[in-house]
Length: 126
Image 1: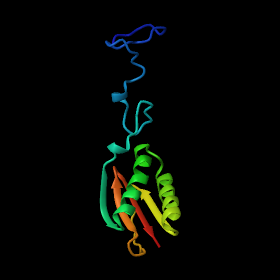
Image 2 (image 1 turned 120 degrees about the vertical axis):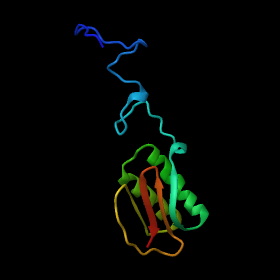
Image 3 (image 1 turned 120 degrees about the horizontal axis):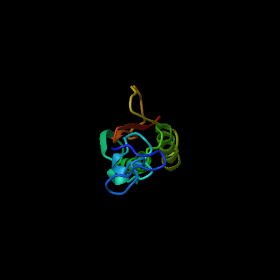
Image 4 (image 1 turned 45 degrees about the vertical axis):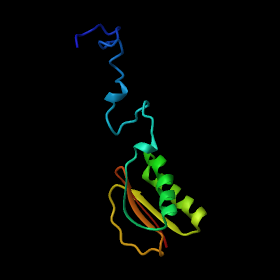
C-alpha cells in the first residue's frame, strides 16, 4: 500500500478503511463484533451417553447456545449443572473444557460425554 500523509486514512479499493478489517478477516480467537453466534453452527459429537433420549437432547440444547456464544467453560459447566439439578433433582456434576482427564462413578442412566465444537462436556449424576 502506498504511503499516505498521517492525517489521511488509507482506504482499500472498495472504499473502506483498511484500519478495520472486514468480518471475514478477523483472526480466529479474537473478539469479533460482527460474529452472529448460531447454535445450528455448533457441531455436536456425543461420545458416550447413558441417559434417556429426552434428557440427552435437553443437555445438548442447553449447552449449544453457550458454546455458540463462546461462553467460558466454567459458565457452560455451571449452567448445565444448575439446569439439571432443577429439572432432574440433585446432585449433578458437569465438567467442560478442552483438556482434562477423568475417572468417575455415576448414577444409573445419568451420564453423557460429548463434544460441542472443540469443547468437551461431561455431565453426570452422583
